[in-house]
Length: 288
Image (cartoon, rainbow, N blue to C red; front, side, top):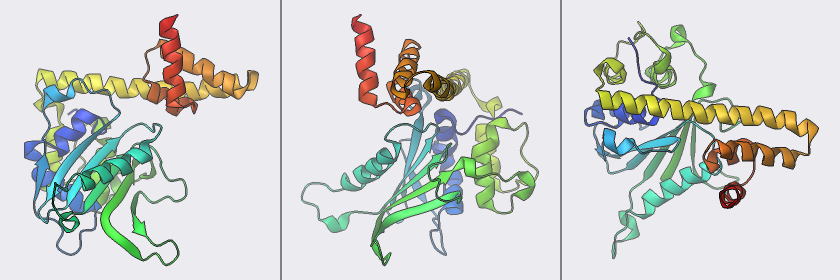
């Protein structure tokens, strides 16, 4: 068998954001988020995935939105590249979803809590080795919670290093699935949970039509190209930095990547230069 790389936008939304993904998404969220003793029992997926809508996507992330049965709203985002301003975008998207709930003449008390669950294919927080971290508004010294209305949750895939024999909880299995499905040739023997098996079924390339296969392959190639460009830029930067001034080396790398039509945001992340400077260099090249 051959499975989709769930870290790509098309596959992630197909598995967790399709019309048939409701039970899968409920099980996944209950596994990675502490909702209390009862967990969540129902939700509505907002804007379920459609293949044609994904064909033009050029971003390195995708999100799935849902409304829980208790009216809380949740954004589940998969981010594969560490790009400039990413941590601010997570906060911005959560705050935007929170604020846009309020219609004209409605009271602030009608605002429902927001949960932003972000899965990253890179390490965000070097300060600790926890795979899942929870963030909300608290008083600096006493840690008394100001409000639970906006909660940020992160799952950092590189920190998850368990192999199949070490998967002892459904939480471990879900994270293992997201991180490794694209490299597997069969469903692991320890995976007997119905919703996990259904997730593998949705990720099975045998069930894809021609359009879906085309989108998946193009998106996977796009992601690997951007990753490869970032890695090469960093290596080149180290080498050239020894021979030239650090800034000059970064500018040289940026110019080379621009000739390959790499997105300015990706170049900024790989070189440390500002996105505005990259765009300025691109515009100068166009005018010449």
